[in-house]
Length: 367
Image 1 (cartoon, rainbow, N blue to C red):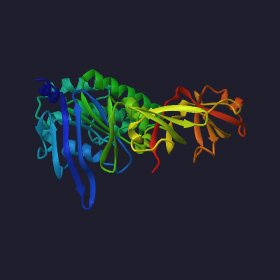
Image 2: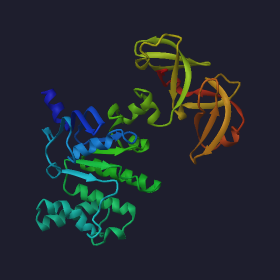
Image 3: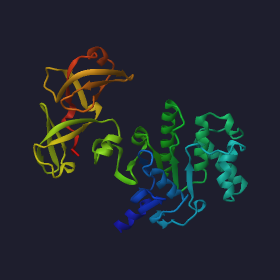
Image 4: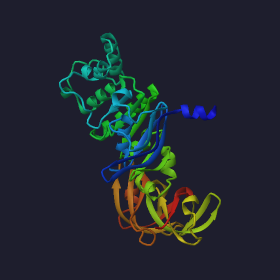
């Protein structure tokens, strides 16, 4: 019974899905289960396979191997219009000759819904996306953000089993993008709608997702919550791709059970031992540390490493300090210092010590 309930909790399942385009293998036996009501993000660089996986869900083409299932039913050969999928494209794909209401109503008309039902549901959808009163306008009369809301209303009005989002915020400016992210997440939670979201933007993935799948070269490299992926990346690719990371050369000091300790200067940092399996004690390893974990202090203080302030970048709520540490890092360290005092306190050329707050990080063997 428990196993049955676990299966019933999955809205979309990919089982060993493979897809090729000519000689290019876009997906290598990808397996993934998306839970009901979950906001799942597919995150990765261009060409990693995330959009291919989204299009397989939509039914734009079928897999060359493996199975795609929605609500427990295999849909490999089921056409798009029979999948009850809501899709929001990167370019919105609105019909320019139709009104806002006409665009939103399109999917309902195709499904043969009666006119009174169409009118009621269109009004509800426009209210949901805060476009009440805009039904008679044409897309060209709307701002980019309003056009995006129309596209979202059109995807939601059919009451889809799954909502698919293909980088819908990429054309918006920063402030509008942030506000639309918040509104989309509120609507998704309100409706309890299973959502698969494709992006290459790490910030979007971290702030929106219940879970995210980090992809590279047609494979899922790590699946987990934003906190898990950010704080405990499973490999060097994920550590480098998701968020900013500093790489410091250090030494493996000890290994015990699930934890290990690495040494860097006067600092001792606890890391997970899993990625260091087979590495000999005293061997050099690479320590990945987030910018907000680093603290700049006087060069004479006890610290992990020492260096010289090479650049400052004022970011409003914080200052990014770039520190040259030739003895411990191949590239400049990025230190994220809260407030604005760091600009005056640590001028360019200042000799500083760098400490690791919390004494934790993640380390990997040197390739």
